[in-house]
Length: 129
Image (cartoon, rainbow, N blue to C red; front, side):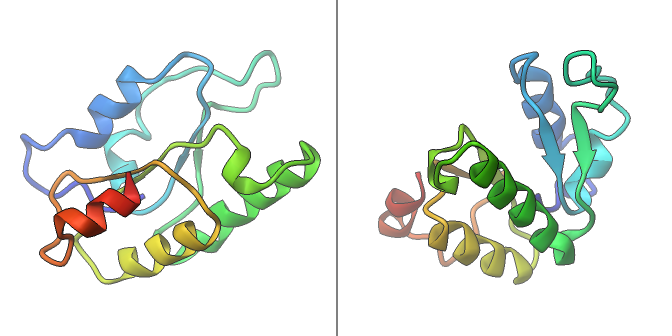
């Protein structure tokens, strides 16, 4: 989740979604979703459920966390054991709260981009990826 910026040449999220395996399910969160919600990625099997699921805005991060927690419960594992990939971008302080939640849940690796915030030193980055 996060912002992909307003510049027309920034396509971080669009490029990422296009590069994902066809079995991936994509949960969008935040303004970055506006770069990918118009992509037709089909459905999850023959369920009719779209592969791109909108979880809301940045402030709705709780929804995505609840989906991950429920998946872990159903699959009888920890959230950190799920085959999740998380991508955060950094235009607002809310992303720090999302990051702290992800770290608490043990989620790794975490993609941070397309631009790093100033506080991410090489040591901090090594914890994230």
